[in-house]
Length: 368
Image (tube, rainbow, N blue to C red; front, side):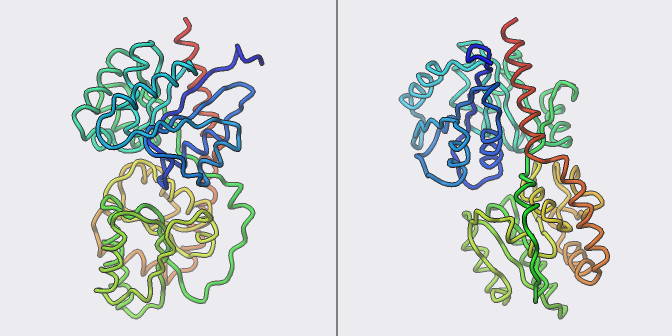
């Protein structure tokens, strides 16, 4: 295929950090077939970090533009983004999170189609008035199409924008199953619960710590590994100390090799107050773990026969679920097998194929 026939895609996100959306974009860009597509990634905020996500993208031959916008509104940053988009001249623009805020005038002026992936329920992603106005404007003039990352999020988007669900494509978040297939679990001397994700209020890890504290007071022997970093980290460590369980908690920080921790754990915990489709859960499933999670957002799409769902904020229910799985190896094994079976639909190859089909569809629609 000649360069003239390739679909040109601009993928725009705030920055490559440690979040699930950042990892999803990196896996997408790293997996695209560059014989059929020309892709470039634009990071609106921040400078090059030279982290593993950036290296993953660049390793596939995809260029990353760093706009380096600082705090507050910046005309110069917007101008720079527009110049670089003009130079690339994409057929399709694919935005993520609040990067849409700085991007929207360019496709509006150039009449280019926009796909915007909602990594959160729409009312949370559009908490600020300007984002809400922009998204409704672009969708109203049929320039932007929302993309859901779960069936549940598709329902939220349908209600929020007054659109038929059939008009909102669903492309699941990816997990790189090949990384997990190579690993063999070791032997744990101590029963291990594990969680992974950014330490913030949304994830409500304080609830998890309180539940774990009650669980330990029942006389059970276990530890809890908490992978990640974030603004709540100090508060979580202080709470663990106050609860007298700090010696049972392991805080490895942010790790690149999350799969090596997961395959050596027994049960995965998630205590979020809201989610769309958490990548951490998919990674836990790829490691063959049973799940205990709050029943929020798209979680119910992926935690079925492979885990236990509880109401958000229900500490007693989490304690009971932890106790039940701790005592019942047969249930843990059955749920772990179900996790491995169910997660196959979320392999990164399916995500790349889903977005590739959308890129072609919307690019061709624009050329008619």
